[in-house]
Image 1 (cartoon, one colour):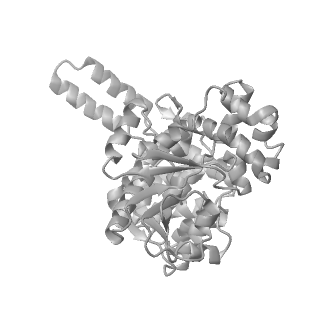
Image 2 (image 1 turned 30 degrees about the vertical axis):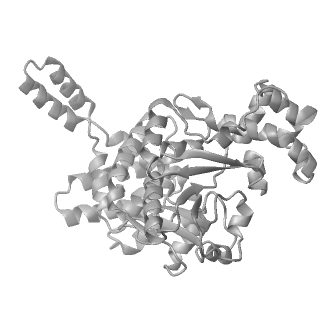
Image 3 (image 1 turned 180 degrees about the vertical axis):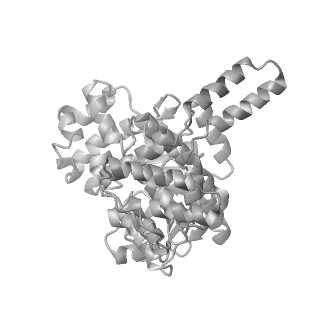
Amino acid sequence: MTEATRRRPFRGLLRTLRRPRALVVAPGLPPGDATRVARAIDDVLAQRETNAQRAAAERLVVAYAGLDPGGRRRFLEVLATEFGTDAATLDRAVDRVRVARTPSERLVAERELRRAVIPRYASWLHVITGLPHGVAYLVDLRADLLTMHGDDPALGLLDDELTGHLSTLFDVGLLELRQITWDPPASVLERLMATEAVHKMNGWEELRHRLDGDQRCYGFFHPALPNEPIVFVEIALTHGLADNLPELLNRDVAIDDADTAIFYSITSAQPGLAGVHLGNELIKQVVDELRHEADHVRTFATLSPLPGFRAWLVGQLEAGALTPAELEALGPSARALVTLADRSWLHDSAVGERIRPGIMSAAARYLTTVRDGRVLDPVANFHLSNGASLERLDWLANPAPYGIEESLGVMVNYRYDRSKIASYAASYLTDGSVSTSGHVRNLVRTTKL
């Protein structure tokens, strides 16, 4: 995503501000300017009249817009270090909790402690929220913060506070589910093309193809960002499970009597909302919407990537952890095949069929291996934690270069059975139990044939 695209909401905010007396600072925010920023933040927090407080906040927003990356980091460091909690007040509150003798004293002390642990910049975030397009500004601000904070504890605490604030602002109950068609404002369509993270689009015609006929796109929208999708999902209506991505994306003839909805891409369109999980609720609501719209569609599944599979397979090979049957199928050129030094199998169907059982066996093991309560693959973890089952693996379903690099072209169908979503999710989240079809279980080869 380009910086210009990512900054669209922020630029929208600047256009709506009343442009009060400017707070002029250098792009790099040298020490003297950082001190002036601190005084300006203090001024915002000291104001008691709403209009005056917002005018003071607008000066800071305009100043932040003119900073370079280094200046923005220093701005956030000032906010995080000089407007956090007061150490002395916090220590006193902790001591009062420790010495409280009665339940009533304990409750009073806990209330003081609760107030003491709230950083001063929490109030600043609330003031910014009330500005025109202030919510969009905070989303962009967190996108900046995510690239900066690393192991810095002060910036980490600021990120925690901002994440919690945004999680409340973007609660699913405040969002609107919309079907995105070719008719919305151009800004919505531009955002789809710019942020699609799974299968990139090459131009307007390809975008139009994904919105017309038997293709669908749904997104969550927030009232404060009416033309900015928060997260969106792309769907194709088909007969049965899809096992070939190019065919799915490039069909020329629409299917009128489809019985299956294939979710082939889900994208979070706002980098600043990373960690604010909305994709699971989006899938559930879209399933309900499609069931209501097209009662002949009975099966809801995905055609999903395995982004970490090939890297894992290389590690398994180097560690001597492949099964004897997998090694036999891959043959003496196993390392060249999985590192892609040898790509002849992509064009030689005989070689491809020979190595296929080994690759598919390893992929099935990869998707069902649980460590620390979750499977290894992030996409699998997302769908399984949302109540999907592991239905089928698809050989060379994505032959595009990025598909080969990620997973040797293998893709996977996860299935969403509305009557079993809750129980499957509970089993996975409780004990790491992966609901798996017989088809996937039968792919695992151990001993040589």
